[in-house]
Every structure is written in C-alpha cells, then in structure tokens.
Image 1 (cartoon, rainbow, N blue to C red):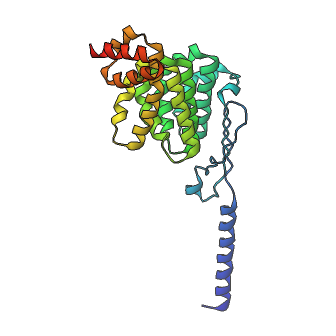
Image 2 (cartoon, rainbow, N blue to C red):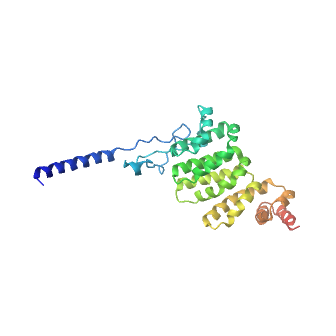
Image 3 (cartoon, rainbow, N blue to C red):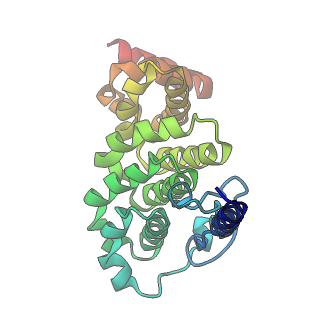
Length: 270
C-alpha cells in the first residue's frame, strides 16, 4: 500500500472520529416537570437522565422536578380538557406527561372534588402504578397525589385501600429520603381522614407480614389509629370491634381514664 493511500485513510478515520464526537456532545433537551403550574420546592435528589440517553448516545440531560404543597395548588385553566384526557395521560409511557396528569388529579381533588369522584375506580390503579414506578420523581408525585385524595375523599377510598397499603408501606421504608417522606405523609393523611374502625381491620394482616420493615410501618399507622378509635367509640359500641384490638384499646383507656378503662375491660370479658 502506497504512502499516499495510507495518508488518505488516516485523514478519513480522523474525520469520522471528529464527527462521532460532535454527535455525542449534543445534549438532550427535556423540559422540567411543573407541579400544579407553579415552580416551588425544588428537589435536589430528583435530577434524572433523559429517557433516550442510553439508546441514542446523547449526554444525560438533567430534569429539574419541582414539587408544590397542596395548599399552594391553583385551579386548572381548562378543566374539561384536563378531565377528558386524564386517564389516558396517567397511563402514558411518557413519565413527564404522567407527572402532569398526577398533579391535575391533585388539582381536581381540591377544586372539583365531586367531578373527579366519577373516576375514582379506574383512577386509583393508575396512581398505584406510578407509586410502584422506579423513577423517584414520578413515584413521589404519585405519593403526594395519594395524600390529597385521602384528604378529599376519606372513607370513599375504603374500597381502594387494599391496593394502596402495600405500596405505601414499602415506599415509606425505602432508603431514598424524599420518597420515604412523601409516603409517610400519605400514610398520615390516610390515618387522619379514614375512620379507624374501617381502617384498622385493613391494616391488621400487615402486622404479621414477613417483611420487618412493613410490619414496623404498619405498627406505626396502627398505633396512630387506635387512640382515634378510642376517642370516637362509646363503651357500649366496643363489642362491635374485633377482639384483636381489645388489649390495645383497654391499655389506652386505662392510661387516659382508669375508671373507664376498667369498665371497658369488664365489657370485653363478658
């Protein structure tokens, strides 16, 4: 092979190398997720890579996911459009669209509670799907949505509790702090807005779960609900409560009011 041919080959390889470097250097352009039309509470742990970064060779773009507290959410500018496309967007493969849809659920739960109630049955499984998603930003947004719908609908959520309890217990015991805190907030909302007489039997099986973290989280929720059950229940109605709860109820009554506690103990012994 002649020297001129080798030189031409080297030049061609150099040009190809420069071209490939230029293509790798181009970043993905991804818009940030806005929660509820207002940018606040930037989450430092939330920057995520562009979904296409692995397949097209581009650099991972940083997506700043920002969250907003429920009391600062504003109403939707176009309720009809948001409502009509809600389920489809919640089931979207585009996680950014799903985040936006979840925040629309939060806004509808606050400002259009009666209308959103029509969609509760198909809505909850889609929210659970996002809670289970490994993408932390999407998971946290879904957990914030859980907290808002518990507050909005209270005991109307009872039929959906079985779908939500395990994912909430798991997420509240994981290592990512900002996801864990959102899950705990959702559990607090659940125990605050759903009657303990309905909620406690639902949580009872989780007290014996094989996973020690789930047992621990279930026990915390259980302990928060029992005092509410005691304060809301008349002594004469305690016979309607499963015997499983009797020791905890008696203990709580004895601490608050010894005389009444002994009366409760007598009722359970009958």
